[in-house]
Length: 182
Image (cartoon, rainbow, N blue to C red; front, top):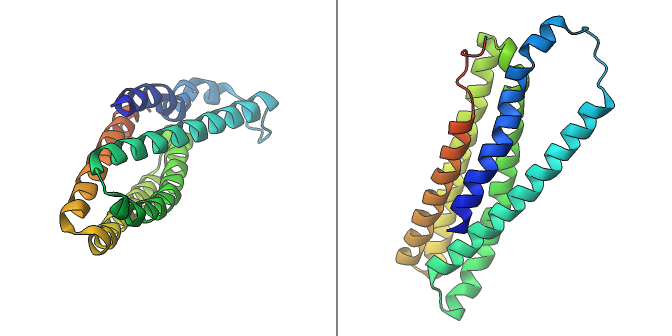
């Protein structure tokens, strides 16, 4: 359960930086010059933050796989069938999570200037991403069920769903509620 403590720690540090930094910058943008030039410090900060996010996500994915391995209790034969399916699932989930992170970044960038149109756009993207993630989990459940049986597939789906809920809770609790920053 090291994953839980790392997820908590990561979300406490990263998401507030993504979501709250525009809130802190609200007064700065009111007095700032309207130029579109980006300072070198801002570029470096963005690159450092992205590198940290990438490293953290890699670590969380590895720990999720370790938890999954400990809970699945597979024979060598079943493991040979399960892990390639899980790896494919994880790869597709990572792509969906990339889209989700971009949506969160866009939310952070536009938080202080949120319009009805932008709020709708961001929520529609979020809902579409959630739907794709649910479809991916269902599709992977079917693949695992065909490969190693329904009980093992149900165990996979249950554990994966619980881990995703933990991560989702951390993300959601770190983001400010729309419309409350201005």
